[in-house]
Image (cartoon, rainbow, N blue to C red; front, side, top):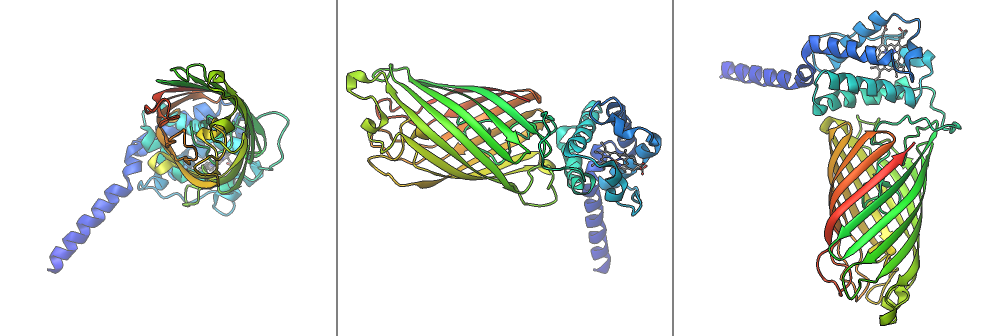
Length: 420
Ligand code: HEM
């Protein structure tokens, strides 16, 4: 019996060991890690953003210590004795006065090095998950005072894309991420144009947004909604949206060793500009369709977490709203007029550093008798080839829109964003 137990324990220990060094083996063991670190330093020493930081240091020694550290971190058989005065990351880096931008540039160079050495994204993200929390010790110079020039310093995709109401997020859900690529020491901005075409309607949306110190986001958007099928084929509705968002806690990227997501609160003030094309029916504004008001404000709280270990981006948003079809059909209605708390969800899988596949769900209130309003849903693929441009394609389901065209409205969603 004792022998059986011993064998069992040995098998369990071996299995755990095999599981623990999965990342080490994924990186190609000692040889693979050395190759990755060599490639990484080729990139770092040519990288205008950070190369000067390494002037005068013993690069070969830094490389071999880094390789030792990656080997131990990834579950390999090495012993990394630490570095710096106190054998810790903080004392090894504090004199360098590094910023978020430096940290992200070096990590990105490592990601590119892993790509060049054919390490799959699901594996390389696991190493990033282990390194990201070191940001706490390594970055000692982030000030929170915006520099005059945008620094383009955030990781690709961490400003989100632009949602149809202009806020940084997915396509239909605002996220806690702040738009653009400005870090805590800078600012960034983005502009977007989006088109959703269903069988009977078309929605165009375009706007601009700015992110300040990766903390505050301000946005402006215009929505133009058109009917394409009788009796609403002449229908035209316009809406302007002013948005503001503040990150109040957490960091979606760096806090990989904690469950805590990045949390932001935001608002979207919307003004419906009236209804055109329904003169024959005597309708010129949304109140004649049963809405209580032509303007309204949505308030929301959003929580976003990037789980590098699992290559996942998760977001949950709770919105307080009385908007009908985002406000395109006004605010409040003949059926229901008070505010409702509506959940919205997004999930994305990081196929590569520049490609995210995901799905979204946005519940909405049902306030109007003439519109059996239902949830919006989509499946999206976002391509972010660089920090200046992104393209998101989706298959969207907008539910039914008005009782006149009672068919479920489904179709293509296409959105382009430029950012700096
Ligand atoms: C997760 C990120 C990082 C890790 C794991 C890391 C790891 C290391 C290690 C293990 C060393 C020790 C080398 C030695 O003692 O010789 C080191 C040194 C160094 N690191 Fe980092 N580092 C990181 C981020 C950065 C960043 C963002 C920069 C600058 C852009 C940087 C610049 C340096 C420099 C210049 C040295 C040489 C310091 C010296 O030899 O005293 N490191 N780093």
